[in-house]
Length: 592
Image (cartoon, rainbow, N blue to C red; front, side, top):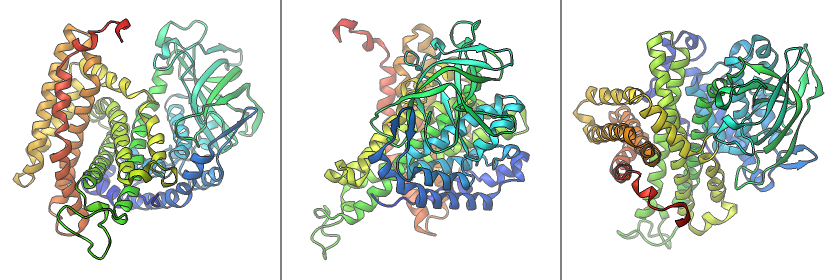
């Protein structure tokens, strides 16, 4: 596998030339003092060095060695502790955290790029700080000042890690039926009892403490999701002066043996009257959890992008070096026995598909991150609300579409290698195995599609959707004829999505099955249309510079490929949506 190199030039292009992030930050008082273009560049360059130099070298052995469990203790693969110490000491765990508690206070537009680099370098490794950052988000937004002051500084510093304990053996997506109990105590604490499964980083040897956020129900809780509360449960109790006390009454019962992400400990966690502290108010646990979810689901989408990028870097290096057969038009390298793979049309199709999906995904993830920043930092109520609704609309697309096309990209990368792509030593098969989980955890992609179609489209009669559609149409109207080769197919795509959205809303009124029947293909159509918008924005930024250097020429050539070869996928997907739900119910259960 080729050595990983952070795509800093493309990240800079997206941030500075496509979205002009520096201008946005200058307009947001909470960010204006802490970040500008120069600061962002310096941070990303340093993060790229850490990712390539300290974390990427742990990827192969992390997969080969995996985590081990012995009597409740989990040992991470060789090199993880040293890499984590480098990462934590550099302040990277708290890069997006509140400076009041020791974080760096960087916007999501920057942390999104850092997440991509770390996950490209080693997804298993990246999951540990990702879960800590997610736990910090919920604590910061919903916990008492006392809990924030006691736990956030060490979590931002990477001295303590975090986990999110949601899933139970009988309760995955349907969290309303969880059985973990929380008994109130006279001192204001709670005793937490229950079993959680699939807990990423529930136990490991990277930090001296792990702060678990646990969903549980109080004795008098109402039934269903309305009765869920969220609790902070430390692995090791913490004294009032911040020092560590005795271990809490919890344990790791085992770790899962998985298809991929072998270096990430996926734990069964048992809580046996463990001491915990409520976050927010009783029965408000889901709201506190979803504060984290929008960020985490974008983060999982970025994982798909990250693995697609890593696969592309290896595939393009291999395609330029490996010689096989002659080009259809005659020898390109007559001095060699054969031509490089990259001369062949099908290899170019795969490489360009990867490049178009990766670069489109980087722009889209940055766009969603920008909306998160506006929703969090804007001082204008209307602007914040609009951005918040866009985030709600786009989060399921970011999670599902980025991971779906991320897996496609890793498979294309493997295919470029041919038989060598199936062999472990080249690393391509690991990327596929690692990427596969991204379509499953943090809510399966089918659930994301239902969320988009049901809650974010039908439930509000398309109100959230109109924010996106109006923005795209406004962009098209503002461009001149020079951009027509990109805006004309974009116009057709958004009109198709308008029609499809109206069809879905109308059909759902008469038959509730139509939402589930249409949701996956509908999300895919939305994803390709959103990428078309991103590629049109990138084409506008590159158009006048096409002859300046190869970067801009490559950007425009890839944009033309996307519109010619990938955007047309929306037509067959749209036909599938409009086929309706009837054919799904032609068989009874016994006929399957």
